[in-house]
Amino acid sequence: MKIGLISLGCAKNTVDSEIMLGLLAQAGHEMTNDIHAAQVLIINTCGFIDSAKSEAIDTIIECGKLKEEGTCKKLIVTGCLAQRYPSEIKQQLPEVDVILGINGYDKIVDAVEGRLDYFNDMTLDISYIDCDRILITPKNVAYVKISEGCDNRCAYCAIPNIRGPFRSRPIENILSEIKRLLLQGIKEIVIVAQDTSRYGKDIYGQPCLAKLMYEIDNIPGDFYFRIMYLYPDEVADGLIEAFASCKKVMHYVDLPIQHISDKVLLAMNRRGDSESIYKIFRDFKRKIPDCIMRTSLIVGFPGETQEDFQKLKDFVSSIEFDRLGVFEYSKEEGTKAYSMKSQVPARVKKQRYNEIMEIQQAVSKKKNAEFIGKVVRVLVEGVSEDGIFYYGRSYMQAPEVDGYIYFIAENQAIDMMNEDEMPVKIGEYVDVEILISEEYDMTGKIVYTREMTD
Image (tube, rainbow, N blue to C red; front, side):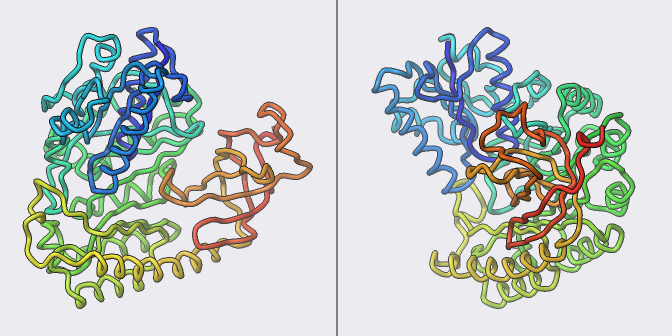
């Protein structure tokens, strides 16, 4: 059967989507990127916050219309929304034929072939992650999920209820997967989990992310790896030293702290305090001066006063993050914060969001300008729509969440070429001199490529 898959949400969801595609391909099914040609449509949903739920529901409704047109014969919904709201999907979205929760990914072949129409049990088994997968990431980039679930129980977050407790994969399984990916030509490995800094604590008795980093660093090959989603309270000196010592780890630190007011952090049920958070960022910068610092924040959490918000603004101005994401607090069923008093009005949340982003845009523009005249190594990911520029990312930009570096090569007319004729190959590294910088993107020109010198 021809199968189309739509993957929504985070990088962890992307890995799960790739696993389903791999299982379906092994079973002899054909994949298509054209959803209008698909006989079976799979939507791997996110159900974390209201905006993600709305996107998932809208996508289901749009795909349901394809069933009415007669192209699509079966619509399957998987992922977090399916795990969190199975009965609501069944009652309110009759166009959905099969509902598989987050523990049903390894049953996708049975679902497609008509042997299963519902699976929503919560199990602790995560062996499905070891299955071979078909990558849907940009060429030569792959995510590797090192754990599933979360134990942090932040007051605003429904993930532990949806994905269950924190479960780490054995180190040897992760290393084997990375080696398989490198044999496929992968150049950038992106390590993901709900909380990467806690990795190994459940199966080895202590956090082992630093150990895992050294093991990855010892794998032969021309590749780099990136660590995402660190949780502050598990970032000890040994982990910072691993970032400083490993030759292949990108000096890019993704450390979502959500807030800096001690009162708000306590209400959020976040471990650690403002003093320890400030210290972590300063320690990283002291030991790794060229590291790119990224964080995520929540504005408008219940009880957040103007004084609390001012502390957050001062923090953003003081640290000067290279990359920063901001979210307006989303009231989620089943969380401690859902029934908290002093809910912040929507207009206030929006205003606070805008104020933080205004500060960050100025910081980001200033930070990017510091790279003008410098040469950075860029992984080529594609050609811009106008056919004039290539684009890609350096260690400074993580996939999907950060901007791009656009660049040109001499004697090119890339809009008229097929990929084999291009002077620069997608999925390879080139050296680019930065000539122009904006708030989020940079523009430059190639000064050296490996192909040109070989």
